Picture 1 (tube, chains in turn brown, blue, green, cyan):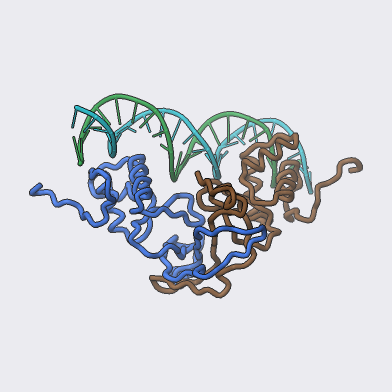
Picture 2: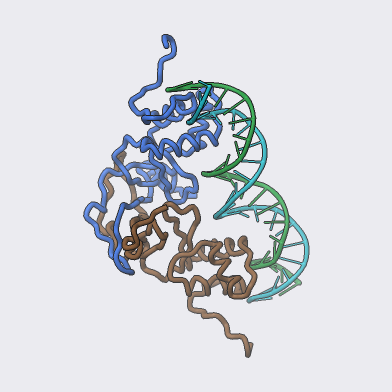
Length: 146
Length: 146
DNA sequence: ATTACTGCAAAGCATTTGCAGACTG
DNA sequence: CAGTCTGCAAATGCTTTGCAGTAAT
């Protein structure tokens, strides 16, 4: 109560017990500059000197997603799911096919787009968009994909 | 040479040996009205009275993709990869969150879109777009997602 | 004290790989 | 015949699940 500095509370999903593993997952997500996979998160936690069980990380992430604190994304050419704090406004990404860097996009081509479906009507709830190509650095370095 | 009607040749990827399993996979894709997973393809083949090994189907699909005859896609909320004949022009889909139906879109919001990236420049090679929501039928039936 | 959470092990799935025999060109 | 396929089994990698002990409220 006196010594240990509590982790930032601002992003804490309400209604969840505050436990060590959860605080560590949240800290990693808070300091990440791009979406991370469950195993990357686990490794970061271990690098910080704590043990981390991948199954626990998955359970925590799933819970955070359910609470709306975290967003889960899948980008093409990547089998693994990635997670990021929901603080970002962005919902779309550019993915470098060379270095796999994921860059958030701030504009959205779908703002006033009505899909033209082959088959009947459709009640649109949302959309996913990814742009892929080479990031600035990779474009200069000779585009060594694969 | 006289009795057995050969499978349609129009879609046959050039340079590939014509074997039973490959013809069957292609036939299933030809008669499919939407993208199928490897295991769905395998089941269709078995329903047709032939045996089908999932690993062989994967190998064949991978080969067809490499030859450009087939396209592999991943839609959100679906872990499995889906495959379709490349005959379609469409590259984008609307996915019904209720019945999982996949509906091709013929227009594209990205035709003249330049992504606004947070971080530097980007050489765009292509993009993926999915719209999700309820298809006409599910919208009427009360939107029973989950 | 309850109920929720986590360490840990093991199961599940989709997909891939290895290998020897079978088949295509 | 030579090289390519395929049946089949087993491995792989991500993710989920089960269970019993531990911790949060």
